[in-house]
Structures are given as C-alpha cells and as structure tokens.
Image (cartoon, rainbow, N blue to C red; front, side, top):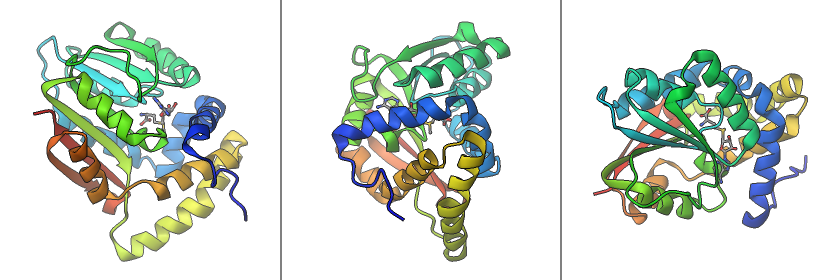
Length: 245
Ligand code: SAM
C-alpha cells in the first residue's frame, strides 16, 4: 500500500506534522497509553529521574515539543514545585490541551506555555539549566538546527535530555514490535481518532529516525559533551543525555 507521506521533503514536512498533531490533539494522551501499553509513562518517569531537578527554586527547564505537558508536570512534581518550566510547542492545539490539564492539576502557575519552533527558539543564549524533548525531535524537519538551538539556549554546564523511539535490539521483540507498529497502531489510531493515516505517518517517522549511536554522534556534532544513552524496553525508546561543557 502506498504510504501518503513517504516522499515529502523537509520543507513540506512541518506542515504535515502540524496537521497530524492538530487532528489528534484531543485524543493524544489516550492514544499514547493505548499505543505503548502505558509504557510511555515509565519512560518519561525515567527521563525526569535522570534529570533529577533540584528542589531549590531557580532551576529553569525548557521542555521542547512539550505537547500536552507530560514531561513538564513530572519536572514540577520531582522538583516539589521549585522548578520553573517552559513548555514550548509549535502546535497551539497540543498546547491548549496542556494548558487545560495544567489548570486541572493546579500547576498552571508553575508553567509558561510558548508556541514556537524548535528550530528557532525565541530565547537568549545561556538561558536554561536543562532542555528536555520527548518524542518530539523526530518530527522536526532539521534535527541539526534543533540541536544547535538547544545548545545555544542552554547555559554552560546545562543538561540536554532527549527521549525518542529508537532501534529495538532484541531479536524476538524486534518482530513483535514491527507487527505492532505497522499493523496495530494505525488501526487503533483509526478507531480512536478516526485518523489511521496520521498514525501511519508517526510509525513511519520512527523508522526513519537515526539509531542510538547515530543520534549520539549528531549530539556531539552540535557540541554536546559526555554524551550517553539508556535504552528502555529493549530499545523501543532511548534516552540520550549530553552536557553543554
Ligand atoms: N513531549 C510530548 C509527549 O512526550 O507526550 C509530546 C510529543 S508529540 C509525539 C510531538 C510534539 O512535537 C507535538 O506536540 C508537535 O506539535 C511537536 N512539534 C513538531 N514539530 C515541532 C517543531 N518544529 N517545534 C516544536 N514542536 C514541534
């Protein structure tokens, strides 16, 4: 079956990504649970525990492609309300869901929502203590620009953490995961959001994303030091860490 999004170039990609997330925003959180069997919650917990934000006020975190706020809420909790978190996303529909959730949870005052592009961050250099991005960077057309911007806005000594789908490195899991992602996920997407095509795009974007080692090399090329990563669930997701040193 021809895959509609396959041949898009980088210039068109952002527009298509925006449509996808605009269409699925209202059902995005439910879909995450269904697609990952709830595992995304554990991976995000792992990300924030590796960040280990201090409980003293003043720690500034930028959560890019922050969507509906999952990482930001965890940073606020882990810092016992001390961290100051900016949730940045290119998509107003996703941020709208995030804002509503923040109000319901009573944490809206701890968060700032900014609609902007990861490739052109509207902040001065050396602004943040940490930059997080979860399941976002593979949607950005020019990953090298996003990494360069991450490096620029971090203060010297600041931390970069990226959680993303990655390369499954267990032989049997590999096969099961292929079946799941190519067949089950678009069907669940169709049933829950009425939009199987968007989820076909998302699965495809996972396939095209560089594996653990290559993404680490891209981070190093952007200037990050002490780059390392942890695999989750046999490499279904990987968490990369680096420092602006
Ligand atoms: N971080 C959230 C999470 O883990 O649940 C949301 C991840 S969601 C799969 C990807 C997000 O990336 C969407 O909200 C989308 O709007 C955002 N995004 C895509 N391209 C972007 C860009 N160029 N700059 C900023 N955000 C972008």
